[in-house]
Length: 167
Image (cartoon, rainbow, N blue to C red; front, side, top):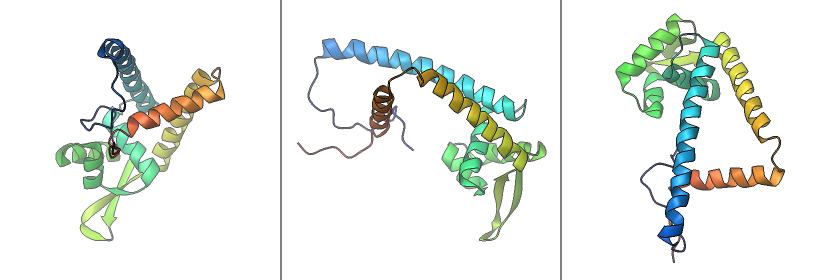
């Protein structure tokens, strides 16, 4: 998954006047900053809904396991860009709180497969439904075309590492 903040640069298209473009980009940066703060708050809230002591990293682990099922710890560490020791400690904590289980990987005797427990999955799904309802409540007054345009623009922003068009 790429980030709209990565260093890759898409085709900029026609040149825009910096005097016009710079204040607009500053507005976008400001709104992104607000969105990032709110997203972090939402993750903390969603984590607490699953377990009062669950930290954002643990929530992110559970979200991967809820979507992709059992995973090796090393895969989780790579996907979340944390070192193996940090992931190992997090998995042990999650296991102690009965949020994940570990079993030997039948395809690799040296590795363990981590899975989300039914209780954690139920909490994750409930927090996801609440979050989806919040988003729905925020967008319900928008015209369907505005929502489509918003999704298209977000998609375009997230596709920032697409190959450049030839001029």
